[in-house]
Structures are given as structure tokens and as C-alpha cells.
Length: 289
Image 1 (cartoon, one colour):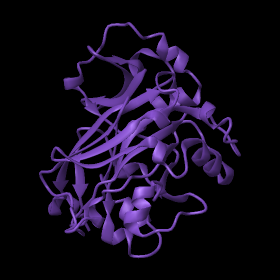
Image 2 (tube, rainbow, N blue to C red; image 1 turned 180 degrees about the vertical axis):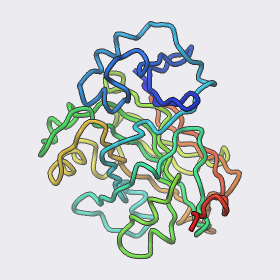
Image 3 (cartoon, rainbow, N blue to C red; image 1 turned 90 degrees about the vertical axis):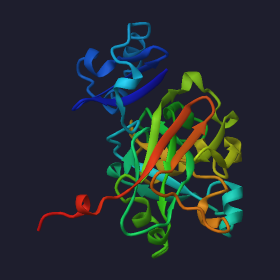
Image 4 (cartoon, helix red, strand yellow; image 1 turned 45 degrees about the vertical axis):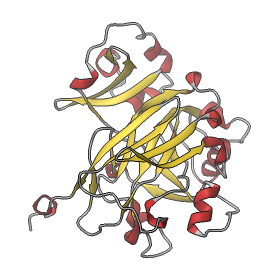
């Protein structure tokens, strides 16, 4: 199944994406108002029962939200492709490089990614996201995929100068509206071996990144095993698996996203995450004293 989180007017919901539109599961399934709540109760089977129903909304009539709008945790993995290690000058790490994002830094497919007032160094990072469907602590690599609900596309938009203020990446990864997540989750029954997929990033239609998922330094089971060692993973948690070579920061001259650009991240078998880029509006960013 393809499952999207979306909004119609002021009402947020989620549902099954079909060729004819979206079947609104949030309205039809009592007790499961969000996709995270459905995953937490292990109720994907209830959702599957809606397959074949008539869609409630045309895709053109909804605003897509981040695939999981309210995750408990978002873990991002740094320099996890050999090509990105090479261009950045990092040695191959002994362990995954983990940093965190906050939910309010994310936008859905079609929503603008916001370049903040504080920087012009807004970079793209096409990635694949793993959505946890079953809780676990100290999960073994051999059983890790049993804890996955599905996969999505992610653009780990980076404010490069703020990312490099110190050795900690958090400031440059958490400006509001800088991370794209979507357009939907594809469940594991439709993608039993995600390592066979490919990832591509395009900026204004020009390909800027491309790689097979199999080029990950630390694969999905390894990342799940590692992260679940220091914390319990719960349904709706997100692991963003890292970007490949070709980011704007290491091009000559650097290639930064700017107002009016359109950036796309495509993972084969999942779909295309597409976001326009907008500059933050100064008067909208000022809080009343």
C-alpha cells in the first residue's frame, strides 16, 4: 500500500493512495486518527480492509503533509554513502553518524522548503527514510526488517554554515520548513528488498545526485540495530538513511537552493518528493515582543 498523511481544509487525516484518489482512513477508522496511531496499534490490517473502496478525495484537492507528521523520534544518518564520504573528506566511520531532526522542521511533498533569513547556503540532500512499525529495543540485524512499516523519500535540507558552527549538526538541520518528507509511505509487502532500489535528486529538472540504495555504508538492518541499542524504537519513528555524493556544498562553485527553485527526490518503487523553494519572509518571522 501507499499511505499518505494529508490535510483537507483545516482537517488532518491519512489514507490509502490509489490511481483514482485517496481513501480517507482517518475518517473511516474509529480510534486511529493519525497514521502514527494506526502503526502503534499494529493495525495496518484494518487499513488494508479499505483497499478497493471508492476514494474520498482527489489528489489535487488535498495538501500532503510529512508522511509521519508527529514522529516521536527522527534519526538522521550522516555521510552514509561512499561517494559522499569521498567528496566531504570524511574517513569511513566505525559507527553510524547519528543526529536528530525535530518534527516542526519537516514539510510534505508540494509544500515549500524554506530558506531562512540567516543563510543563503541552503543545500539539498536526497535520502530514503525508514518508518518503524513495530517497537523494539536492542533489535538484532537479523530481525530488524520485521520492525519496518515501510519506506518514503526525504530531503534533508541543510543550512550548511549553521551546520558547521560546531561539530554538532543540529542547528543546521532544524530550521523550520527545511526538510521534505513524502510523498507517502510504501509498505514493506510492496518492497521486500529496498536495497534493490535507486535514489535520484533533481534540481530544476537537472540530475544532481544518483545512486543505488545498495551503496549505503551502513544498511537498513544495521541502522535499526544500532539506534535501537541506545533507545527504544517505537511505531512512527523515522530513520533517514543518509545522502549520496553530489550535494551542492562540494560543487565548484557551490550550488545552493534559492527562491523559485524546484527540488525533487525520487526513490524507485516509492515515488517523487517534490518541493518548491521559498525564501523566508522577514515580517512573518518576527515575533511580537
